[in-house]
Image 1: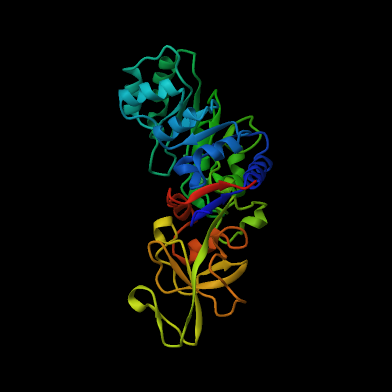
Image 2: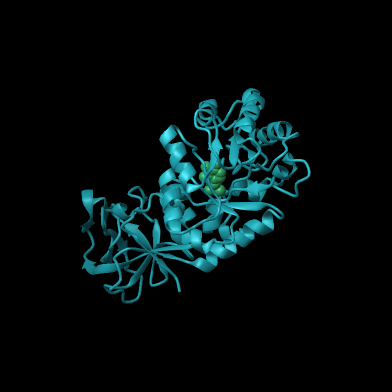
Length: 368
Ligand SMILES: *Cc1c(COP(=O)(O)O)cnc(C)c1O
């Protein structure tokens, strides 16, 4: 028995996409970003498949704990860092690298000396305006953390770009220039690039002296999952392969005469005698409620439009132009030949939100 809604995960695609990263950022080490359940793909499974990455980045302690519980011993960087002594102790127990983005976190570490300090990633705000130490406070933070580490853990420097998805953007150029200055005398590794920067900011190569490209460590997320981070650029043209196929099946196929309405609010009315399929997935699975008419799905590999409002567990599809659809037929909501980028654009959102918002009730299955 197949579950009603599944996400088929393709290990070969994930490995291919990691190769695309390595090719675009030669000589760099790769922190695979697996936060938010590996962008909906399944945290532990993805980490195991991407065993060739040089480490993983997660947003939360719980995510790191799941990886360790699954026996993953490789480097894990906690992007959000810790806010209290309990979290520092737990991170220490799990053997995590910590991002330090605030002077309060420096004080927190000073109050909690560690016999075996982890590697630290000091995050400087070069213009993102979210997490990060002010450039003016960087020197003091570095000295204090250097004393705390006492020559045992390493002290890396990182920053995050706000608009790397915009080509030739002055803000990104400014962030890179600021980081290059701040990192000029940095003795240890540095890290800047997310997916978009890896693909279209080779200038992030120049930001650390003596490194071969994109600084020493790159931090790809979205592109690992085969999704384009660049608006208007298709994943396939970047060599990326979608790692997920979000699928369900038809549970009803009905003939409705012209004039009949479909779904809540009667939001769609048949203009002709129609064949309407009901598929077993809805917004409770993570398919957006907000899709406009004419958003398409694949039924038996053929495109067909969603009609009426998406419900919690179901959505309706106009199958009038398809040959002999039947209950049980396969419906692909996004995946190969129907990029999640396309569905996101229709729904007025970004692929990140659709993927990260996929419900735990969607069963993740690894493709053999
Ligand atoms: C999420 C995240 C990334 C990955 O971003 P993508 O756009 O998915 O490649 C990299 N670095 C940091 C600090 C992040 O929070």
